[in-house]
Length: 153
Figure 1 (tube, rainbow, N blue to C red):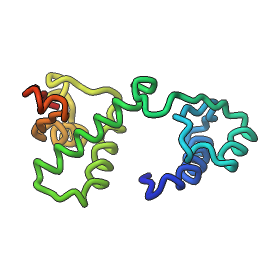
Figure 2: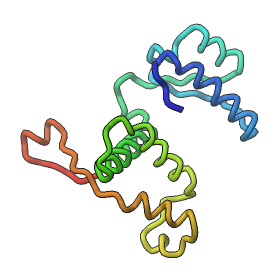
Figure 3: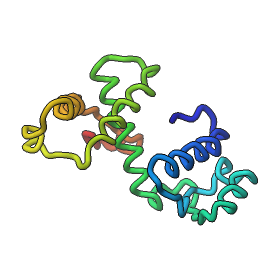
Figure 4: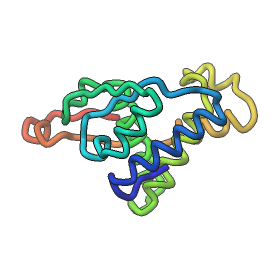
């Protein structure tokens, strides 16, 4: 689900909560956020309190405190960028590229090494090979550009 505005966060949370409870038979016990405005509305706070969901807050603008999620976001962004560059598609295809990557990513129990790719069969193998076939994109931070350092993602 892509949000058009930050104010859509509460509606997206309600949708996800209903999905988790109905389809996965799971209950959300805790929610961690950076205490940004979209998570602190009165309706959002009341809903989590009524459901017994514990709220945990990290410091704003400090991705180090939420490393796993930040790494996942970076991975999705890097792969979507690589797909768009490889296919020479405009940025308007960003949502589709991210959705395609996440669809494949969610279908894999773990990230297989190249030797394991050879043992996969059928659709799963072709999807993994499609994701693995994209070229790496050179990324240089503004700090690195001034020093001539770069890395491949």
